[in-house]
Image (tube, rainbow, N blue to C red; front, top):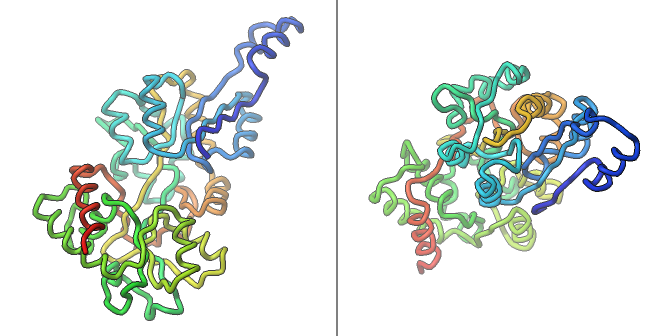
Length: 346
């Protein structure tokens, strides 16, 4: 859902009339308000209602649909239109660089200490800290792994290398994105840092991706599109950009599929909550983050969206899985250009 604004409480003019007519004093007029910018599924109505009841605050939520939309809204107002926002760790860096975030006081977010071990030590979560300050708290995540048809692929694959297996020629669905394709292929080639590739490495990966194209039935952009192609064709393997969310949708549709995070490491995204530089009620914003870091809400988040949460165990990552969280890449334009060349290759 794009740009949906959810406002609770009276419209401005109606509220003024009520206050004037009833003679209420400034206490009611100064009711707390929290302005949230989030992805769909991160601020569900029942959670918002419960938070409002606990705090007496009015919560305004704007739902966004792209990373560029978040940047436009936060940068456009220099952080003044919202108190906090949801952002992945790779994108977070440009907000910190631009001075658009406010460090978080962990003493005001006690539930952070109860997060899963891989998230609890923020010093080990790449991207959320800068100069000793906490700029964001992990909220949810997902890996970008491999979906395989359990009737067609035996034994179960353990590596993304299976995408290049000749026996699956014309039976692979790949995601239409240059940045991610170069990164995951770098991992299959044993390259330590898949986000900072040299010119030589980019050329080597380009050749390998052209080889992969020979096995690809189609490229997809959305999870729904991938499901439609799968249902209408002989598909054995899907590079699952949408992770467990994609798995859930396919299984709900009756597909005989399973999911694996490859042994060489799975790319993964990690979404966080960050305070803007224009936060008006910092303590209230920190209360919101703390409120959402409860096991009950974490479990509901995973059940409703398929995403992994940071407080309760889920199927999104096993104890032995190696997750490599997305970072900004060396040259997005170069990767996009190379990807177009790969798709055009005969």
